Length: 202
Length: 209
Image (tube, rainbow over the protein chains, first blue to last red):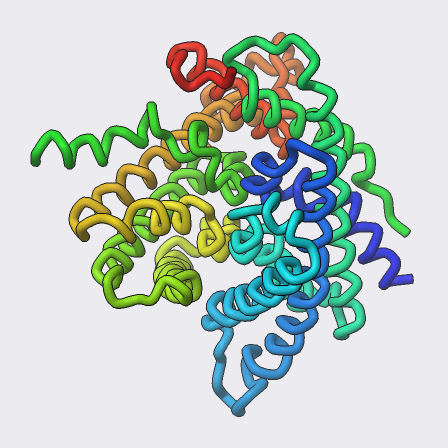
């Protein structure tokens, strides 16, 4: 039950985009067509599912106070360790996508290597660390679920956004609002819609 | 200071602003703008990290093979972020608690990475340093504008000091009430959207066709 709660919470209530603004850069830039959005969302979810548990194990057995050597607190190193794991994984995903789907690879362009600096992924690991301290995540299984939920939440958000933006190209928007301006306002309105989920607890 | 170096500093404030023109670094920007104080601390931290990462990467630019540059950049940036994080924890602990994970997220802040990639790898150290300061300042400026609007309308105060008099509130027999919606995350996005709107109607060359 606890695990299901983490899953639902991370998709809807603590949605990466709408409640923490994580991954906004690629969210705004890549949400112009549903197809590309689906691809990037899948890549982000995959990296997230893999890196959050790895970082959980590293946090548990290396970085925590007294974890590696009695009396040594390595937690100040967590930023650099987390980002190294994420960067390595992104490189792997990049190679896989290039091998199996060159079209998607070309569409995603610069944003594929930028998954490494996608705040959603780093944010997922940092929130995982915070949740471990608060006792919300107690084992590796729950950290996988948390990573999956956060990734799916981000995926859902970017696909919804892309669908709206495909439609909105036909409407009459003030010249100055075209592009990023209207995208921000749409995201804000979607965020207000997502606020109805707050308070749901399983 | 020559006019060229002055341009590195002032360009990012308006016509080349990292947040509203280049659309970078929104990730960690908006969640810290409920109040002015964390927004200013965050703006300063990003300015320091961008300036020094630009400086270091500019010194290293000829020695790093381009295949492994991303990981080198991440290590340099992460080092500065760890320094900033430790300093914040030591001197302004309450603000550091408020910023929580967002300090760590400066690493993945697209502004830092973007400026290193786009500018520091092709320019001299001093110019890169100024570019970092300028972009950090442009980022801080947007943060401060958003935080000003949200704190004033959302809690009726600035820097935690009360601006709207107590006697105006409905509970005290007045006519005024805070706009609670301003405290929620979506409003930050809508405010930035409006800032982009105003900015682009004044700078017509930035509008999308």
